[in-house]
Image (cartoon, rainbow, N blue to C red; front, side, top):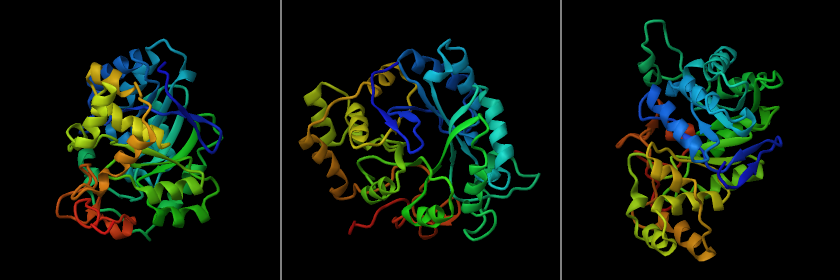
Amino acid sequence: MADIPVFTLNDGTKIPSVGMGCWMGSPGGGEKVEIMCKKAIEHGYRHFDTASGYGNEQHVGKAIKESGIPRSEFYVTTKLPNTDHHDVQHAFEESFKNLDCDYIDLYLMHFPQAVIVDANTKPEDAWLSEPLPPDASPTFVETWQAMEQLLGTGKLRSIGVSNFSIKLLDQLLPRATVVPVVNQVELHPCLPSNELIAYCRSKDILPVAYSPLGQTQPVFFTEPTVTAIAQTHAATPAQVVLSWGVQRGTPVIPKSENEDRMKANITLLTLSPEEMARIDAIHKKPGMHKALTTIHVPGSNKTFGWTYEQLGWNFIEGGIVPESE
């Protein structure tokens, strides 16, 4: 097990500060995912983040089971797909069966949008189907209330949300019996989301960073501030950015199939206050305040059918943050 910090959630459970993301760029990945997870386990990873929509829960669970390491040493996250907001119990049971790892540590609402598909919709096309409007049933509040019913069965320890803004959390929390333990969102030096992080902490919700290195736009590998700090520490730019994320109090979920990068990504640095401040300021550089994931389409103000206004995200087009920010 790697020597990394562990964060305590609002229900008393603990989550490792570095996880291995299992999204392979498209649904599935099968044996590639299994091999990646087995290598990651050898290099000390104990936190694995998958989703029903990734199409590889069985292989993640198989890697964990065949490791020979006690289940209690692992932290496993999976997620409710948009297409199953109307039947949370069934979706959870499918994920539980696929992972086959005794229990699930964390079950997230992957996105707030609910999608209803008919029997003729191909699975690979389901995520692209038009979602219900925010006020149509099941709303994300109703979906959350159904998720709350999953607790106490022994199959699940914690529930949380993903891709939720302050606006949506403000709508959810007054009607929630259980406060989400985490809000997993895109976080990195180009999108530090300081206001959202402060809000989540005020509600005892831990922000968790997905795509902490960018996704198809790994700008930090050449960004001058990051590369200079990396040189000072004889480290990789990725180590600098991931260490910044953990040091600011957000678990990070990078993904890599390369063993050298796996080892580097879970070897955290201790950054000085001055280095932290320099990284904090990257998003203030011209053109650098932006999202870096493929869920943001250039020229569009929507993500999976909801506008940025409906989602409560302060973007203009394609995940770009207004310059005034």
